[in-house]
Length: 362
Image 1 (cartoon, rainbow, N blue to C red):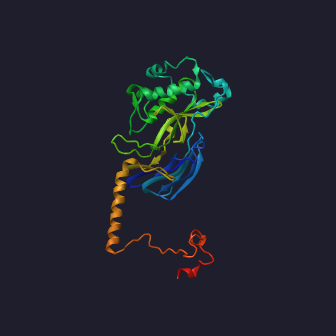
Image 2: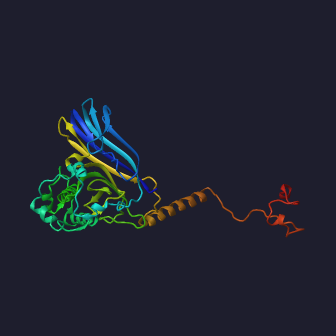
Image 3: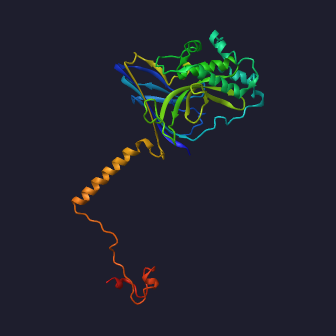
C-alpha cells in the first residue's frame, strides 16, 4: 500500500439572479483505465433538486449527465476521492515486435478503430519545422516517444493561462509558451502527423512533497503536497495499449496522474459543459489534497519552534505543581530483608516465600 491521499475539488458558479440550467455533463470521475487505485469517490451537486445519470460516452469515459428541475442562483460541483499513490513503473509495457521500431503502420482493422485518433489537419509551417528532425528517421519507438515528449517540454515554456480555449499548435510554437492543455494538444498533433494514434487527456495531477528532504518553494517556505487539473497525451501501440506522456514535465505519466476524460478532440474533454440561461456572474474553483495515512516525520524547519512550545508547556506544569505544593520523592519505598537468611531467594528475587508473605509487611 502506498500513500493514500484525500482530494477535494469544488467548483461553484453563482448568478446574480435565478437562472435555468440546461443539461450539464460532468467529466470528473477517474477513467476505467486509471492505473492509480481509487479507494472511494463521491460527487455532490447543488442544487439538490436534479436527476443524475452515469453514462459512458463514445470514448468510454465515465460522465454524469444532470437535468435540473428549478431555477437556481448557484450551481456547485463537489468531488471527493481517496487515491492510493502506490508507485507505478511507467515503462511496464511490452510493444508488439511489429511496432518496436519506427516508422511502422497499424493493421487495417486496428487503423479503422483508431481512425478518430489519427485524424489531423495538414501541419502548418512551424509544426512541419518542429517535426523535421523526427520524420523519416528509423529509431526505436519508445526512444521516439521520449525524444518528442522532451522536445515539447524543452521548447515550449509553461505558463498559467486562464483564458478560455486551447491554442492551436501554430500559436503555441509561435509564442514558444503555453499551458498544459496547449502543450498536450501540440504533442497529440505531433504524434498524429507521424502516423501514431494519439488522444487528449484531462485529469488530476497529484504531486507529493519529498519524503526524506524538505523542499522549499519559490518564496522560501516548505513545499506542500498539491493537486491541480492537468492535461497530457496518450499514444496507442499494439501490445502496450494507451501510453501516457506528459509534455509539461517531459516524463511518462505515473501514479499522480489520474485521467478523467480521454478524447479524440480536446474540446470534448472539458470538466463541466452545458448550457445556462445567462452567463455566470461569479466563478470559484478550489482544490485541496491531504494525506490519509501520513507517517512522515515533521519538517526539520519547524523543530526549533516545536521545542520552544514543549519547554513553555513544561515550565507551566512546574509552576502549577509548585503552586499546589505537589512534591515528588524517589527511592523511599520500604525494603525488607530477612535477617536470618539474607541470601535466600525469597528475600532477593522471589515475590513470596515460606517466611515472606502478606504478614511480613506489617
